[in-house]
Amino acid sequence: MINHNNYYDKVKSIDFYNLPEALKKGNEYINKATSNGASWEAYHGSDAIKKVIDMYFSKLNEFTANNHKAEIKQHKEEHRHQSGKEIMKEAMIRQGITNPDGSPKKKSTKKIQSDETDSNEKLVERIPEEVRFIRRFLNLNGKTKTKDDILRFINALQKAILEKRIRKTSTYAKEIKHIQESLIKTFNSMRAKIKLEITDKTYNEFKEAATGEKVYPSVQLIKKYINMNGKPGMKEKAAKLIKQMESAAKRRKVTKGDAYETSLQKAYNNLKVFIADKKQKELQIEARELNGLNGLLNGLDGIDDEMPVRKSAVMNSMDFANLEFDTLGLQGKWQELIGDPSRNFTAMVFGKPKMGKSYLCIDFAGYLARNHGKVLYVAKEEGLDMTLQKKLNEKHVVHPNLFVASTMPRDLSAYDFVFLDSVNRLGLQPEDLNRLRALNPSKSFVFVFKTSKTGNFKGSQSFQHDVDVVIEVAEKGKAVQMGRFNQGGEMEIF
Image 1 (cartoon, rainbow, N blue to C red):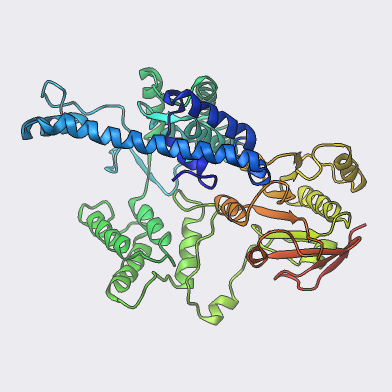
Image 2 (cartoon, rainbow, N blue to C red):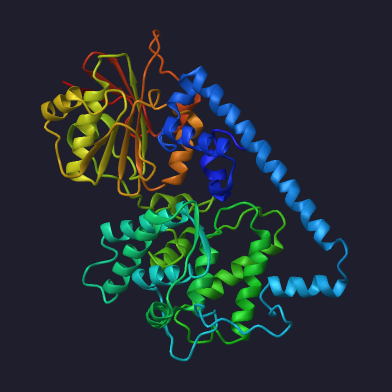
């Protein structure tokens, strides 16, 4: 069922080009009303807009449901009078096993190397970032993709370039430039969907660059093992991973003398114990082993660089006491107010109007921009007007790393810290904020809330328990921190 919570996820699979004109208009209306999904403030704040959009949702749900039923009915009618041989023949053609005339279909040469190691491939611990993007680009060939699919690829590539994981001096700079220009050109000219075709010349040139290296099979297996740690419902996956390990040894893809043999054997033994113990609900990797594996595979392909690996649910207190956590390293008045939070902290700031919330947040945004990374300040409350400019100048926070906006952009990949001033004016609900954090696990967020006449912030009170830092500006020019890093910290704002 399509609604305002899932609209932009659900419509990715809908081809609006072939929809009735009324539904096309509805999609255009919702894009305009929400700034392409950036803010649902108008929807939540206006009964008239909400009524129009809800009616559109109803019509779109009805159309997609009827369309799906019609497709099923047509499919059944087409097959009702077919013999078993005809049905089998059709299935084999659809799966690419045979041609329409019944002859065997030749395997396409346009395919990235399979998991079998070619004699010319070099085994490595990590595939270069550029090669990973080249392979991803080649895998688009002959496939139909939406505008969102292409945009995600472009954003990922540009993020890698901005973070200097891909440099101008790279051996593959020419290929990366071609990919970027090709994708941008495709995105700007396409409608809802497009089938991508890469010329034979480009494909063959890029394939030569993309298939020279292969990650050690043992490293691939260890990464799968680490990614299962502490997660519920992993028994079936653990059993499959054991079979994959045994198969790799049997087929001599992993042999004695492999650089990762000892670590792989430990992982195998732990998986066997996990499968055998019916009381053990989650795979638990001991702290010492986990730290060793993280050091061994730090930053390698398949380990999420942004999302820290979840620690074992049960740890010895001495092991836990020796763990080192990655903190932001706040200094001066900000350390006195907040403490020293982790790099992906979340904070909420609330207080009555004209008490200094925005001044506090702009000052903090400037400090983070000068010392810790790129900052986006979404000033929905004031917009990009003279009052915001005045605050920026008075606090002397203007900096190349500080960006301002009046609405929240859909792509936050370029920023390390995001301020939303205010959550209420942006029309965001607690579930929207939780989704935002889940989609950007490595970023820090500062949420600014309005307060009611009684002094409580507007919105679900439960959200206060979900953030790391809670700052109240209860009286003019004074901030008090009630979070988990420095309970009771205070600061003068002006």
